[in-house]
Image 1 (cartoon, rainbow, N blue to C red):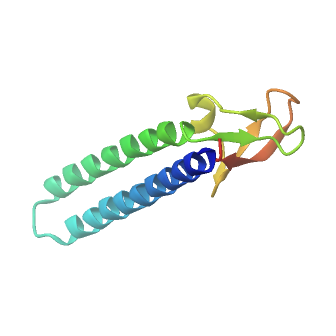
Image 2 (cartoon, one colour; image 1 turned 120 degrees about the vertical axis):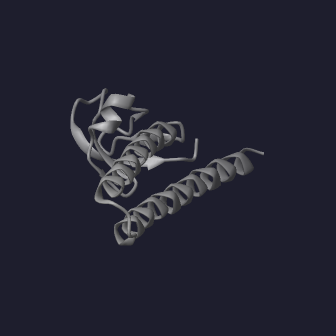
Length: 117
């Protein structure tokens, strides 16, 4: 039963990532299409601003949702923890790693995202 739960959570996480990537590509495509339409420049600017606002809202939602899946593991002391929303927003991200400060050992590391809990 536990293995199924881990697999289900991992599947949900990757489905969420796939949905976010699809939505971001759709928003960028809409922005590109808007620039080729024959409408007044004021409308193009307004639509572009709305698309950027939607993209930012989506990004903040994605960070909040991403924090609810799993935890991060410190490579130095193997401490498991979930960073706060503010720390997650302002940390560097490369694929499934974040540059975070471990609350246990106090050192900054590239921490792996673990979804198996």
